[in-house]
Image (cartoon, rainbow, N blue to C red; front, side, top):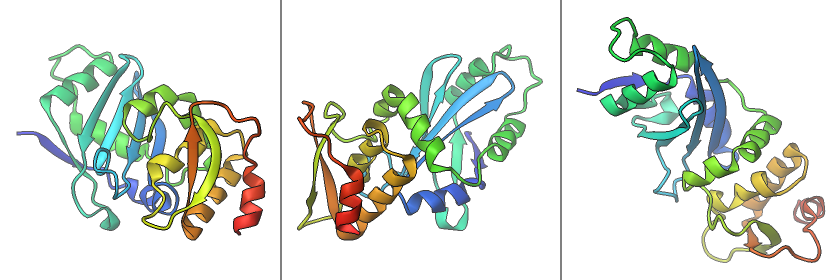
Length: 213
């Protein structure tokens, strides 16, 4: 039977991310293992909702696992299959079957490594540095369109986080301005428009912040 673990320390960054683009990304180092943790949990995106993506830097593998439980109450249950356990052992560069490794202790260490707060600067830097990895999760809409063309008012529906996340990746603005811009876009129900060809004039985010505030 797969073993169950609760990543309770996700609660703080989960609550923070709910007010932004439902995006969590951070790095952990445990022993010899280097883990890039990603979660994109927008309600309107079934492909990534309630999933954890972890990129294992030593072995260059991407793994993902489903989360269960009432997250607003601090329950983030995951089940470690034998496949995931084997990948973790490989990432930690341990001898498989040595009999001395405790997965429960490892998960406790991983839970302890989760930050209480993700500064905008760190989040944007991590997303920019790992764009190809982030794209593999399916958390970015129309990944081939990387040039910001404009913003537009939505008459139906709400702006999708998988579109707004591109602002982290493909704009050069100050991270705090990007976060502010995203919050304003959501508040006034605007989204961003992206294209495959670079426009003649860059969209001035600061100008739009002033217009829409």
